[in-house]
Image (cartoon, rainbow, N blue to C red; front, side):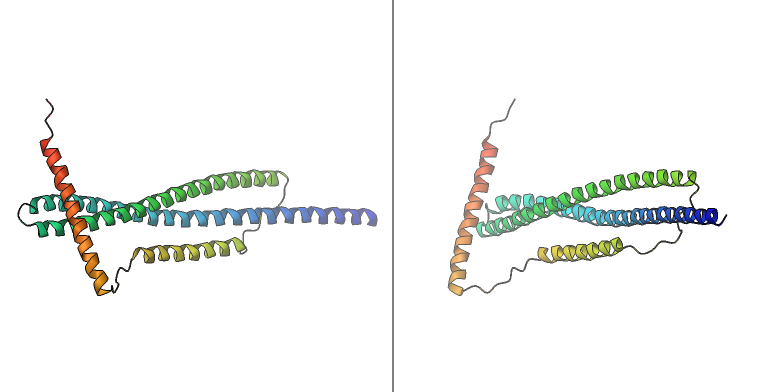
Length: 226
């Protein structure tokens, strides 16, 4: 009788150990799902920020393109009365075109990041669906085997710290990107070099004005299609 009791106790101990193993696995699975959900929430937040940044760049780009067209028209109109005034218009046009080039680069990079983040969010959603289905299937098998449900309390997981590290990294990267966008163009040129640069710049503006007038004349002299 004692031998049978010892065997029963041994078997019960093994069953309890198996139950504990199942409970630990389910707790870890739940922790992984929650970590992915947290990651998904942060990714959606980052996507929202980048989308707003892309919209901001696009709006600025459209404004600068309209401004470039305006300075071009002003330059052609002013040359008939005041060439120096026309050259100043061309100078504004050139500055606007440079700003357009910079904004186009920033807009393209922002759209690229937005696309990448959307792909990441899609992968997170797919992985969440897979993990939730696996968890439900294993939980059903566990119930059919009359094993106790998993512990309701959730222990801390080091994956959360990893998420915090990436969040701080992301904040640092975004901060650096905005700082890099603020270009410091102040400098103290040599007087003689500055004089040459002014003369060369004025000649470049004249050449640009000539080209604008040439294009305008060609457009006006082009025969109409009937």
